[in-house]
Length: 328
Ligand code: RUB
Image (cartoon, rainbow, N blue to C red; front, side, top):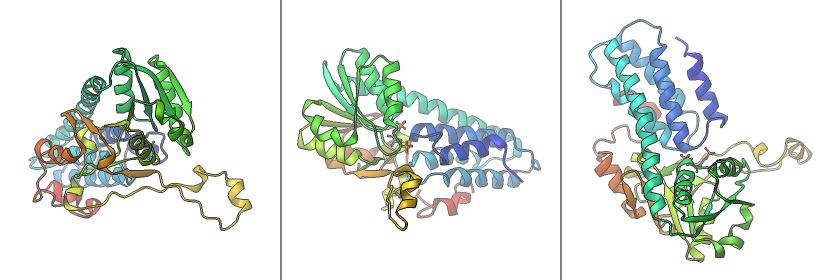
């Protein structure tokens, strides 16, 4: 059985980065799961429906490898199938869990903006990198409260997500100064806070975010500038509790250099890693919807708030290969 057009479109939009940013990716994936359930036109048998939903989940999870928000959102919705007695009951459960995930996710960003803004002192200069909805919302709220004077915003090569951040901050009326990524250290003496988002937070508080974030954090540390990470709880990775490493995505060299340049230099190697890891020592706090935490307390979100235990991480090292187990 094929998948609804809208599901295929969302999967393709995530892969090609028309939908991007870990939070938006997660919400769109939940939306796709909902659509898959609404538009299911196979046999009305529970077993068949479950198999179909697992396949949709696999398709969505395979689109991008780094942001854990994607499998976390899909698995949240897939879990709704556990213990269902009938096809109709299962279909309704998928729809309501997907809606619940999206609503909770939007509320989490709002709470983060409120708590995060309070951490910024009046009259501050903030630097941000890439485009993070959670970080932008913290900065915009802080600006409305008179805490932010100006934002330095990196262009974020090679994909230039900084231009999206620029547009959002401008829409909120925040004074923004665009800088190339290479100007971060030059400007850092003027900066009071770095505020960035996260694609994945590991159980030891390391933050995986857009390539260059770790360089920004390094420069901030040298200048004793505070680094805040705005991250909803579904950015925390349960598999890192059992020592899994986060897979860093590498994208097309043509995002870095033009096609003609590559043709003129046959055999040239161009690397395009799109995320990097900032260790917990370089982060002052992670702002979540459950509160502002030192990065070393990341494990509390996974265990206390999300309820993970070592025993419950049964799908271990290969999520894609073990999704069926989640709904047994
Ligand atoms: C986006 C990126 C963002 C995080 C957090 O990378 O690294 O900082 O995803 O964003 P890409 P948000 O553009 O490659 O998806 O706070 O919006 O979830």
